[in-house]
Every structure is written in C-alpha cells, then in structure tokens.
Length: 359
Image (cartoon, rainbow, N blue to C red; front, side, top):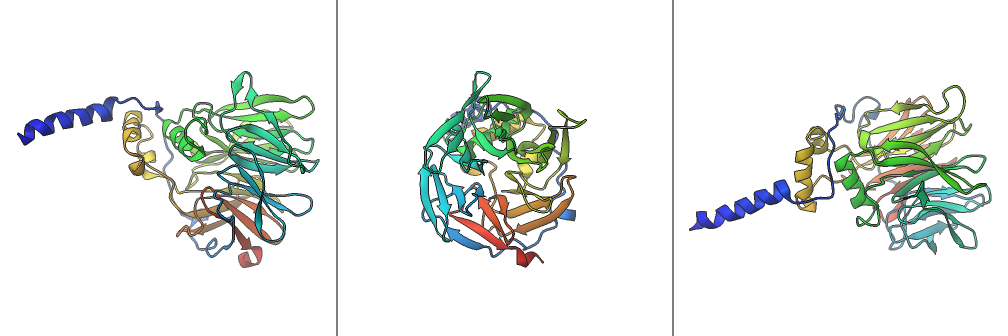
C-alpha cells in the first residue's frame, strides 16, 4: 500500500524537477578553474573590525559618494537616498525605486542608477528627473552602476535586459536568475546630457555591473560579474572602441567599481564564487533543475568581506578581507584621503576603515 502511494508522489516529483517551467534557459559555458584565495588574494583579516555607522532602520548601502561640500550620500533598499553631514545618516529623498550606483555631476546634482527607474538626476532641492529609462526602443530594466566623464557624459550599466530588477522581486533575486542563465543580457550605455541621447556601447555582457572611468578619460572599466572579470573599453587613442579583459578569474563575484586616489581603482567582491555554479557551468539542464528547487537550497551569496585595489594595468595593489563576513556582502569602496568607506548589498550600516591601519 505504501509503495502504491509513494510511486505517484515520486513520478510527480520527477516531472516537476525535469519539466516544470522556469524563467531561466541556462547557457553552457566554461568556468575558469577557481584558484580561490591564493596569490594576490591570499586570505587575511585586513577588513575586519570596521567602524560602523548605522542607517537607522534602512539596509543595503550599495554605493557611497561625497559632494563638493563634503556630504556623504548612500542609498537603501526602500528607495531612500541618505546623507551624512555630522556623522549621522538621515533620510534625504526617496526615488520610489531602488537606487544603486551614485555619482555627483559637475553642477552638484546627485546622479543615480536606479534599478527600477533608470538613470536619475536629483538636484539639491530634491527635484528628481528621469534622464534615461530606455535606449533604442528597449526599456532599461536594471540600471546598476555609473560614472561621469569630465565633459558630463554618463556611462552606466544595464545589468540584464531579460531579468528586470523590479519585475523579479528586487535586485538580488534578479541577479541570481541572470547569473544562473548566463545568457549575456548585460550592456554598457552612454548618456549625453547635451543631446539627452542614450546609446549602447557594449552588449553581450554576463551581468554588467560596476563602472569606473579613467581620470584621463582614456577608458572605462566594467565588471562582468558572471565571468568573474573586469573589462576595459577604450574611449580614445589608437585602441578606441576595443574591448579587453583587464583582470580575470577573480575569486568572487565582482560588483561595484570606483576610481580611487593615486591611480587606484577599487572593486567590491560581495561573495566568493559558488562551487556548484562553477561545476555545472557546462550543464544547463542541471542548472535548470536547480532553479526548480526551493529558494533556500539554491546557490546564494555567502557573507564574506572582500575589497580589492588595482592599477590601470590590472596589477593587484591591495586585497582586504574579512573571512568571517562581520560586515557582509561588500559591494565596493569610496576612498578619501583618510579613510575607505565600505558599502554593502544587505548591511544596515556603512563600514569605515581608517587608512592608517593599512600602513
């Protein structure tokens, strides 16, 4: 009797695992062999014991930026842009979306890559203007990070043209879908303020993420999260229009990029690479089965603090880590003369590291 009951249950389970429709259509690819935390990325405790400043109930300070008056800004999952002028984070303006990348333009406006709403301009009077939410007739579904050139041109990423952040339950769930499918849905966009035009510079990126410009305007860097690498796209000179890989086979998923001081660029690695995703890179059918499993057993980000500094040639200058992940899911760095401000996808605070500790 028990066998008769178990058999239809087993058949139903197998049909579900092998035939139930899911959002992803995984693509086969060859994941580079993960060298882990070795060499320039050898594990250390240099990012442990950060000084934390609370966001007072808000979470997810994805990026940090400072204006000409020295005011710090960050953003949260619930759409708030928060500012800090006296050591305390306070609510400033709500975009009614999910702001991620932040920058200050030449006129002192805050420019935000909002995953739900597109590219936004926010004046000091809190007036919000949508600069761009579509390109070539297609909606920008997942604006992620940005940087602004000296001439005002804005370079920003649309992480996935298939898995929009808002329509898939938020930036994190949408990113997991895109990374599982590995369908090269990301792109690098360019917005020109004088013409109000948006153009596509690059397509076919596996989750286009962080953006950082060379201070001299020669190139722009883009994180390709799904391939664990940093790309360099030349904007001027004999290499103009060429794309090359600057850093490859990173030990984690690269997120934000920022231009630091003294020729440094900063990179955030929110989580180490996932063994299952790497092993099943060339097995799209098995990755589809994984997508049918309950969310709590699917591959996900692991709390591990890690930020990296490198130069324009891709040489690793610093690798700061906290294997315990006390300040979890580190997305990037904003560097000042005296400190590194560390951002996070999920934390309820902003991390600060006094640069004197690095000497």
